[in-house]
Length: 324
Image: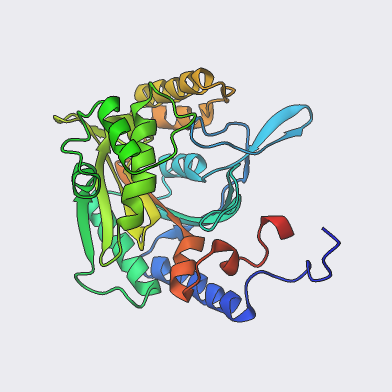
């Protein structure tokens, strides 16, 4: 770390840092004008995300494990139950993943919740905010595409909701994609591979694209429409091949939420990953009653990348992970 005499220097230019500050100020004004309250919640938690695809950083205090949060979602939902009304947060979050062009292990999420909104209203608000930041937006610049239609259009799969792993394997092989180590019994792992390798890079190129109606098995913390087919009430926004935002019609059922946490831990153990502590305080709040609401997490660093025309997330951070 000390061999390079220039290692102390920031990654982002001063001009980019000034633009970043202007964008943060613009976001705060956007929500202030809409009477959405800015909040702050703890970065450390006694619980962790149980999602098998996300790994948390862990530390210890007085012999107990504490986890750096991967999203401020759980404590923000506790505030909603306590009567906060609409809230937002620009939070530093942490995910134990390799750094890359679109990811740094420490990054910034813009997350907000809207009691009384539906998903279409939330998508409109996401569109309004992104348009306020990116000068290339504008009326008519956004389209909505279902998950199934995206797979049909870009991967040639007629019905991703009923396709078996053997069919997905053939599509993967046909594109020359590396499949070593992929779980041969987890169809969502195959769907994710196709989405990340073939479909996502082609989304939002000419028009910003909201992808909706994900498989119910990918509901995470969202409600489910029973169908057929059963689909998750959630969306993702893609711009220039990057996922920018992930929105949910938030799950309120405490028993279903507990079941999903436990199922996540079962999947983790099946993959050889350690099970993680479930957030009992969130479950206690859900038992009191979460208001009908929608919420979205937006990758702020990625949005700033697009706003300033940079190709790598490191170019919009003062110091990326290896210079921290």
